[in-house]
Amino acid sequence: MDRKTFLKTSLAGAAALMAAPGTVISCASSKEEKKSSATPLRLSFQEGVTPGETLSEKLDFMESLGITGFEPGGKGLSGRVNEIQEALKGRDIQVSAICAGFDGFILAEDPAVKAQFDTTMRDIVRAAGELGSTGVIMVPVFNWQTPSLPHTLETRDFLCAQLHDLGEFALSCGTTVILEPLNRKEAFYMRLVSDAAAICRDAGSAGVKCMGDFWHMQEETSDYAAFMSAGSYLQHVHIASRGNRIMPGEDGDVDNYVDGFRALKELAYPHYVSFECGCRSEDRAATLTAAVNLLRTQWEQA
Ligand code: MG
Image (cartoon, rainbow, N blue to C red; front, side, top):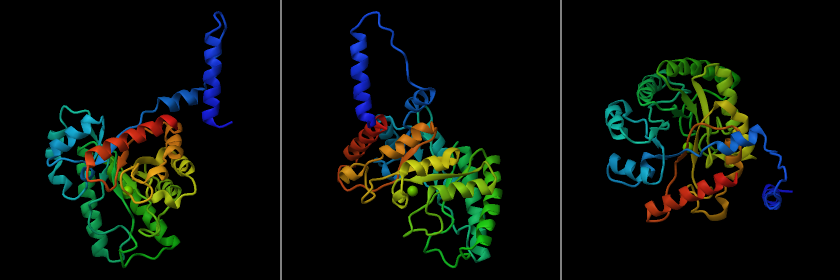
């Protein structure tokens, strides 16, 4: 019996019992079911996804849809802390996560490029802490970033040690760093949510977290298993349509997130699901509205 059939049968049964006064109805729902069904879907928009000329207009639009998370890019973030704090004042919107924006990369072979990463990433992490962000998203190395350290056990140990220090720094700023696994075309180094979660564990700092991006999760064999494998390391989620990385729903039936949402509900996932996607339609506002409705419906179904 699938869940839909089960629910239909249960509802029919409940209705029949309600029609019989005096019948004792036992409550069969477990604590876990109550917990997962009570988990709200917290949606977030990246700054570039949101229509509007100014930050204020963008936030107004988000509020009109009940969106409570805002994800800016990390580039120049330290110079924008006041602007963002002022714009968020009096609104029911928080900074969800900060999307990258640093120079260099952590697995650079060239010490000067690695040093660029260390300096600029720490500037962004400091600003992220001031903004109350859940973390700063980072990728250890994209395929196009060369020369990089070789993909060896020693490099993984080095990465974990470096992340440990960065994670502790992020904690001292009141935030975290969030590892984002990508698909093999973009970053062969880290492709699976479970792999990112294992690096979080081995880094040994509560300031090192990971995320899943429904677009890149084409690498996974199961959305549900991917999120469950991350458990409490899961700090952020990105979402897009699953065929062309446009708005959820613009690719039709393939845009199904129910399996992943079921895991997020079972985990009582407390963070955000953030739009990182393009838009095929010329009417971005209408398409975003439809996408939000689609995700809320699928969250209910999960
Ligand atoms: Mg992403």
